[in-house]
Amino acid sequence: MDNINWYPGHMKKTRELIRENMKLVDTVLEIVDARIPISGRNPILDELSQGKNRFILLNKSDLANETENEGWLKYFRASGENARLLNSMSGAGVGSLLRALSVSRNDRNGKALRTARRMMVVGVPNVGKSSLINRLVGRRSAGVGDRPGITKGKQWLGLENGMQLLDTPGILLPKFEDRTVGLNLAFCGSVKDEILDTEELAVELLRTLLAVPGHANLLAARYRLERLDESGADDESPAGGAVSVLEAIAANRGFVLPGRRLDCDRAAKTLLDEFRGGMIGRITLEKAPTFRRLS
Image (cartoon, rainbow, N blue to C red; front, side):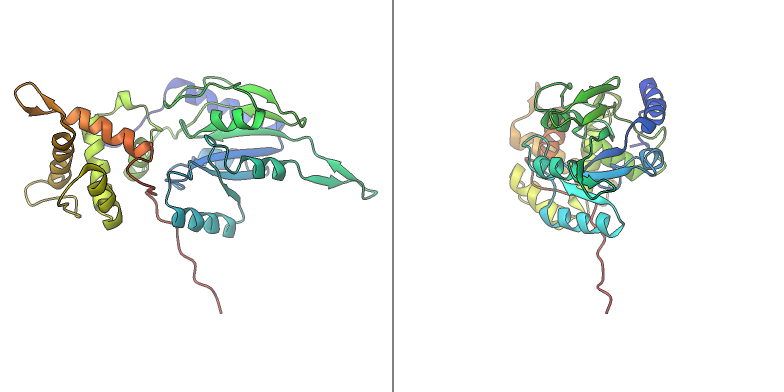
């Protein structure tokens, strides 16, 4: 599969919208998919939010590996970031976030004052921004969907405690220099499926998962696969092993076309949907760096 790039016209406008409105806010809530904590961050947002109070919110943490979640928290906090785990669909972690956002400050006489924050919510497409906003606001006020590109323009929303939120559309880089970054974003649904070859993407996902024994075991259990080539390849083709696994998934699920041909397109869509929904297992695609304690 060639390098993946998806940068519709509204994303360029979004970049300018964020730049223009950044001066109006004091806090930036950057939402990141916990399964891809590096690929899922846009360096442009990092640049635009310099000097602001910032929270890195590892959303969809229920879909990511628990050990890796803790590892990534340590990584970001060691880098000086205020990082938190979040599940905006269930609301887990939202109460703690609200309390952190509602911290008081003292005036010159030492009297506690509640800070009325103005916040901007940013992130790549389909990472859960609108779901989080609906949790924070307490009502359905932002469009929610399982496809990238639901939010098209900015909108200010008020919270009961007086804080204000600015929602913005998702924004990607104009070009992914690292092919792995583009693939990871596509695996997790941040790139529009309509521009992708579904079967090729599913084969790439299988190759990625087959390279990790633990992930290969999850695939075997989910799709009743007896034997998996953990290298993700065979001697005949660089993607042969993964192609064979996709065919086995189609056969085991009964996805058959007229003429007894396997429906690998349906198997590919099923695989991607079930990975994104956490039905294969709690999988983190990017391993957290380990830190050695200094003596």
